[in-house]
Amino acid sequence: MKITVIGTGYVGITTAASLGEIGHQIIGVDIDKLKIEQLNNGILPIYEPGVEPVIQNLLKQGTLHFTTSLQEAMKETEIIFIAVGTPQLSDGRPDLKYVDEVAREVGRYMSKYIVIVDKSTVPVGTAERVQSLIMEQLNLRKLSVSFDVVSNPEFLQEGKALQNSRNPDRIVLGCSSRAAEEIMLKLYDNIDAPKHITSPRNAEMIKYASNSFLATKITFINEMARLCDLLAVDVVEVAKGMGMDKRIGPYFLQAGIGYGGSCFPKDVSALAMMGREANMEMSILRSIQEINQTQTDWFLGRVKESMGVLDGKRITLLGLAFKPDTDDIREAPSLKLIQKLLTEGAIVTGFDPVANNKIKNIFPNVKISEDAYSAAKDAEAVVICTEWKEIIDLDWRTIKSLMHGNFIFDGRNALDGDMLQLEEFQYWGVGRSLNKIV
Ligand code: UDX
Image 1 (tube, protein in one colour):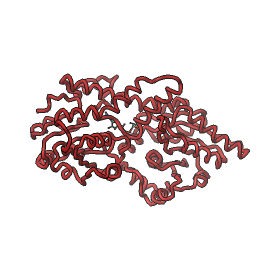
Image 2 (cartoon, protein in one colour):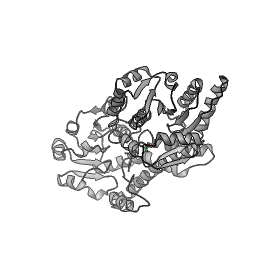
Image 3 (cartoon, helix red, strand yellow):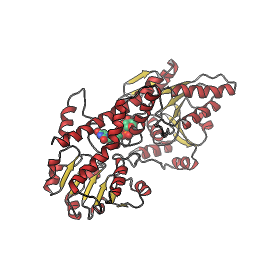
Image 4 (spheres, protein in one colour):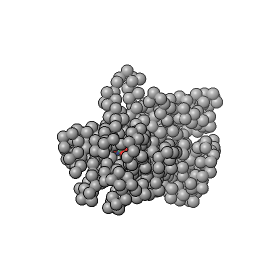
């Protein structure tokens, strides 16, 4: 099928790659000329494992190209994906100005039946809004063209996008007509996954409810970790025992220093805002936001309990991206932690396998090392912020020999605490109880 994907950010590029991979012909559109030029040369503006070779291959085969002209892209297209950004406004709602602008543009050039798909995460009612913005333009042109707007939310996890798109748990299709439903089913025919066909409003809500539920699961275990820490209980064991119950499941029960990224914080805020606009206070969401906000404070409290005053102490943070396998630092707990440690007067050094430059731009005064070993040199404590495999697999004996002290604060419960204690580290994990400190 002939597909246009508007927006070449994370969602747009991964959508183009995954739909191209299953045999569709894709045109990617963006207003940024430089980005389009680079993309046509196979240079990606995002870091996502495996996506670059797929894009390069599709470009070589000639089944994918990028352009700044939506008009050109729309000539033969059957489906248009809207994958533009929806940045957060100061009141927590997503800003729909880019979605609106794309809808108007589509209305300006549409001359035959097309299915327009909302891929960006947008509030309930956005498919209807896109529909009426397109209608407005068609009316101005005195044209009567039929079209459908579908909500097909994105559930890809950064770092695992290709894996997720090749093998999704489900595909949600919010369709308002039989014709749109058939076209969307044909589009995903090659993907063996259950398809949940529902209304656009329901589909829009499914996305927010899913992300908020996952954020709730993480936050629940994070609050449990705080209690486990007080009662000398190991939250990792608790999560394991809980997760064996099929109704609970083992996923998203890893306690840590809080969730970050471009989705969970934004989507929880947007859903809470949707509630407020409907005169309903979503008290669970409010608590989640509060607990997640304070998780780094709580963590820092434990660091201070072990190390005393942090003024002048050398502390090294390993892993700075909001999670492994991405260079994304949006809402990363490491940012909050760096800021708080600096406020306490600590001398902070950091290292991340791919996000170093982004951190340097935000904290020009923090020393960022090119590898974990030099980052750990002379440190009194090492803090794990992100569980990159290459960080877990470090030679900890060497790290210990380079350090000036022996504290490890494992903000992701990713390391083998028992092994580290044998190496004479003082290991502390989130909710793994203070009695681990020897
Ligand atoms: C999320 C959703 O999973 C995805 O379906 C949606 O499309 C976009 O938002 P993503 O933001 O890429 O994906 O990251 P995810 O892997 O879900 O992790 C989000 C955050 O939660 C990270 O900061 C991660 O470290 C944290 N997390 C995750 C935990 O703290 N504990 C867990 O058990 C799982």
